[in-house]
Length: 146
Image (cartoon, rainbow, N blue to C red; front, side, top):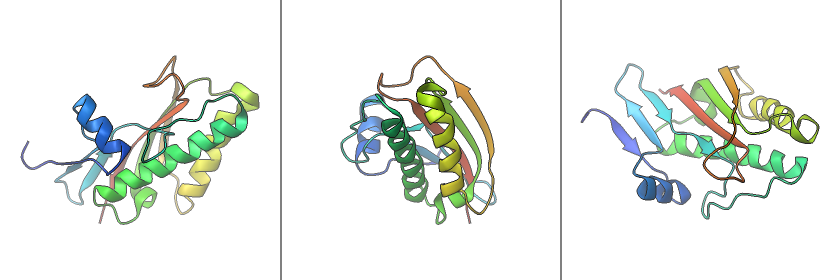
């Protein structure tokens, strides 16, 4: 396993990786290199705070933070293009259709914003719960990097 490069970005990603004994990203020695990241939620990058999902606006903010956290982890693992390098995304969602489809609408908006130049393949799964009871979304991706 010495040819694999594991990384944790500064802030909450490093905290989670240390406390729970895992890496936020692994870079595989493929040609071109592949980065796989662990699921990223809608938490504050430095503190880990998660908005209470009591309305559509808070869910939308969680979704936007999750997309931003994916981008941050990718760039810390060596991607120059962040979401621009993503070819596959897996999205886990709690109550996807709550608050008049806030989750589904937010996911679509996030993909359009962060992947404006391409359309990665996507698998979306509704689950009972995630790492924190406040979390409504977790995004896991794979990316090919230059």
